[in-house]
Image (tube, rainbow over all chains, first blue to last red; front, side, top):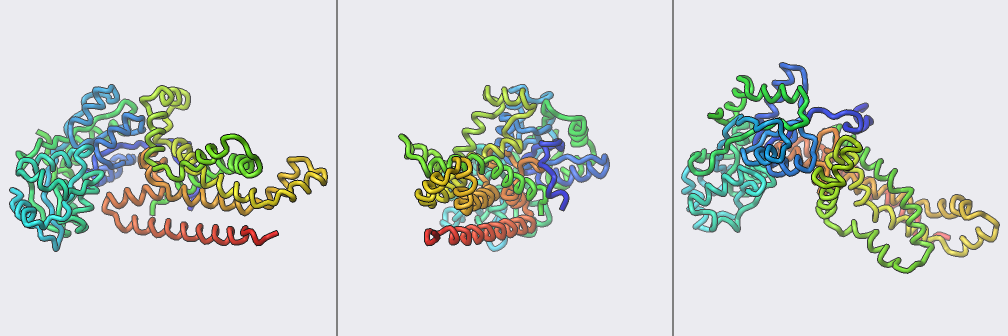
Length: 246
Length: 222
């Protein structure tokens, strides 16, 4: 109960807070917990779409580090002089076609099932992340375009604010399916909510995920930045469906 | 249950009341007892936040106080951090968004006082301040209380502008309503459910209180 009456932080002190793309929801929470167990210091993680977080950082949000879902958004921050340096690619993300249990959508890596269902008029709602702010949404758009499905499916799309919200739409059966992050459906709690097929990486620009330390980074967060490149973090990333950067 | 988020929400509600209530009593009374040119426009302006989408307020606040604006940079060099994405920034946004919730009930409260009561008080030789403190404020008190409760409830429920201006920072700007959204996005439906039920209970209790108060305030009195 005491916690209830303390003044808001920031009036007194700020915990080190980092911003991360929503596809990292499960993986980064696990890495941050592992980091806390090993080093005894805690970092707070705020998840959102890479574009939204980039905008917030440019408007002065007090994040000390930014883990994006692509390279373009962190590069914008570097160009604006807000980062320590160009940062590093920490993972390569994968996209999956997901169909919730009970959906009429049959998933396959060539999107044949989606194409058939679309032609039969069976696609009521299909979830992707908003391509404007979410790199996974952009990858989904590229994939749909490559298979000639973008124009026919456009009016059926439901756009998530972030890839996490798109996954929410797809896994709860509010859409017949969606193109979402592999790292989210790898989570045991979600994996049994439906079926999925990995999309070939050649179907869309590679999801090279870059992280940057921001100018105001404290030593703890700088430590976390290096920890992200170490074997413990790499192992968790791979377990969650990411590929190690090449 | 995100205790830190509940704490932020409660502080935000209390802070908004502390800022707005004194101003609301002064301004609500002014609108109730005075007639002046442009009163219609002033009343409209006071009510605007009621119909304005929160995104409009969020947009202007970020534009005015963001790190890229001159005012934002001046604020940052003065205080050490930018106004958006801080509790203080939330407080400002919340204060603006709640102006109608404070002014209107208070104005109605003062309007309900018959003018001959005021005249009688003046006849008895009370100074304007005594008249205000001993006669008007006690009579308008249900309106003031309604204003405080409505503001508190509305602040607890504020979402769009909090997310835009605050940015979901744990322990700083993540209120209960934003925490529900955050937990939903993290597929943590259990926590989201507990917090949603908490907010629902608080809201119902609040509305029951205001309804009971407004009954006591109804014109049959006096």
